[in-house]
Length: 280
Ligand SMILES: [Zn+2]
Image (cartoon, rainbow, N blue to C red; front, side, top):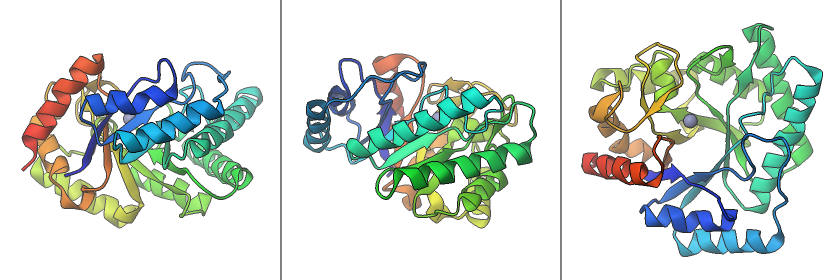
């Protein structure tokens, strides 16, 4: 259940990522299409794009997600940073579209002292404007659930519901649930009862039909710690059992479930083995 995958490297070109994912026996994957720590992006050429699309098919990667650059903050208070963020986010959409990628996952943003309401309003307006500018087509942009570290927004289901609702383009937006972040934000998915309650609540506040993918990470921080520190599966505060609920949940059988755990490919292989071992 669940299309297991990992965030894989694009070193040497994005076209090389599908094979890396398949070597790990992944059915889904996440990539960066630009250097996540730089504003300036390398141009993707047409050949590389064609090879990428071909390799996604050849290596049977069923769902692909892009993660946006870490520098982007659609709630930035500084005019210059906000303007660069908007340009970069539009560029992320265009790159994902050229690569025919279904989902673009992004951290909603940090209000940096402006206040949560103001920050959320800014994010919704900017996402809406950028999607209008980008025009029709892929990707669907997924608001990622956050740990609520610092002034990060999107750590409650209410906030995610409000922001996506205010964008007002349900066919273009959705949610990516990060297990580490949401646990750190106070959603106790580690127990069977807590898992059920969390997704009942998600359904009530946001709607399960608005959930399109997962980041599956264990958490170094405890429940409600608001610490964004990923850990390997079974090594953190969530523990192995927490993931058995998720990977066996029939509602999410076709959802990409992508690892963003530390340690590189070797650690991914181990984490994937652990997860497959939990499948019933
Ligand atoms: Zn994540």
